[in-house]
Length: 75
View (cartoon, rainbow, N blue to C red):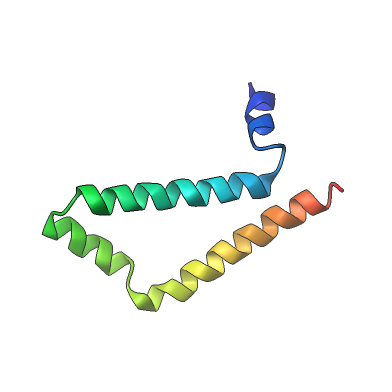
């Protein structure tokens, strides 16, 4: 079963990471579109404050680099 899962990502952690990012974006968009409850919107807005965006970008960059280095080392 694990081989089938790895084959779906073409044995690439970078592709897996990219698909995780896309899935997270789709889920976030769906949550924001479907849940217009002000209390939920306030909670999401407090977590996504502009002051936190640089930290999100740094974390995404680090994970992407680790994934790419892992894949590149196999070449």
